[in-house]
Amino acid sequence: MEHPLPETQIPQLDKFLHTVEYGGLCFLLMRALKGSYAGMPRRTMVMIAVSCTVLYGASDEIHQLFVPGRVCTIIDVFFDSLGALIVGLIKK
Image (tube, rainbow, N blue to C red):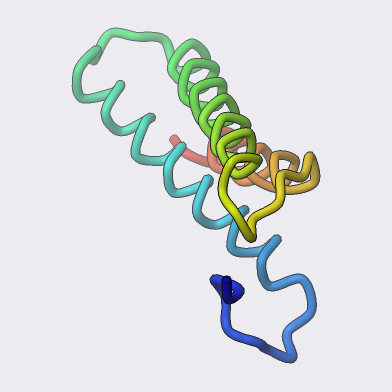
């Protein structure tokens, strides 16, 4: 099976992409929560969105255990979580 990302000279591109992707997911979850539960305190909204994003990232890595040619790494979960936390801390 071929690698899902093209070869590049940019070091650690996949870690950057994990951070951006899961930051985007957290942003969308926060937006959905804000739209559905307008009275929800911001801290609660951030905690729910970040938690859901981290759990999804972890479940995606576990899923990769069963996909030929893919690997499951805790480092990817770390960068998924980092993206969620960054967005959770800066999104108003």
